Length: 234
Ligand SMILES: Nc1ncnc2c1ncn2[C@@H]1O[C@H](COP(=O)(O)OP(=O)(O)O)[C@@H](O)[C@H]1O
Ligand SMILES: [Mg+2]
Image 1 (tube, helix red, strand yellow):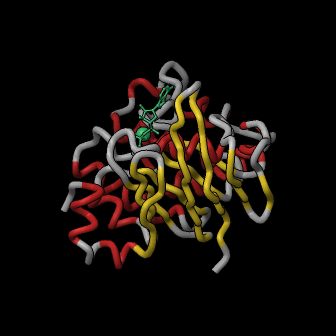
Image 2 (cartoon, helix red, strand yellow):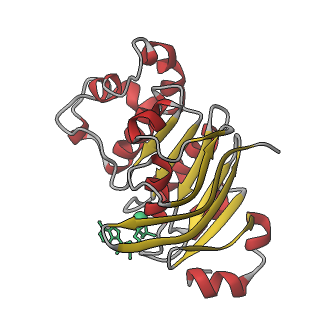
Image 3 (cartoon, helix red, strand yellow):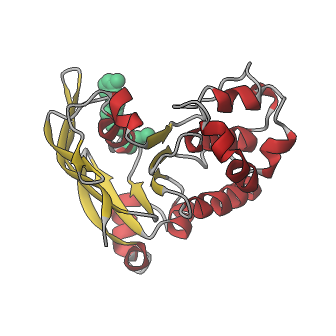
């Protein structure tokens, strides 16, 4: 199995705070890997470290066989990594169409991928001319993910997509995220364990800035003790 992303023992500071103290994550291509862990464990910082937004001081990040540590966020993104941050960062005053247009990395990106995006998110076709701010929470999350699909990204980093959404919307969102692996690879952060175990084939548990466990999701779901200890979820 080829891993499209290898994060090896990274150490990240934010200001003088030593936040990541050894995080290792392997992400196989065309699958979903989830980062688990309690609030404040370092999941978001791991995504930001991969992107160079909080550049690691130690360790190594390899994307598609290439070392990307030390590159600037813009250059890392251009290699084909899309970021869907927490709290669905869309432009509320721009239309759905404009939100997608400004996500282009090269001219013509949107034209090339609009059919695929409408296939995945039929709602966005119907809402194309509406301001992002008039969309429901679920629709805004779909738009946030769709934006990351406009460039031909080979890896998407998606932070807590289900946060604050109603169960029926989460169900719909899960179906969409599952389909993303036809087109790309996903590294997901998810606090909702039901969502995580339904989507991911592999998991990494982060605890106090360290990756403490990783493996196949099918093994984790059998291990109630581990789930209780690190996630406090059933
Ligand atoms: N800008 C910051 N300044 C200081 N500490 C921060 C900052 N951002 C995050 N942290 C700290 O880093 C730790 C990890 O945060 P984060 O990666 O956001 O956790 P998670 O996403 O797992 O909830 C937390 O203890 C948090 O308080
Ligand atoms: Mg977070």
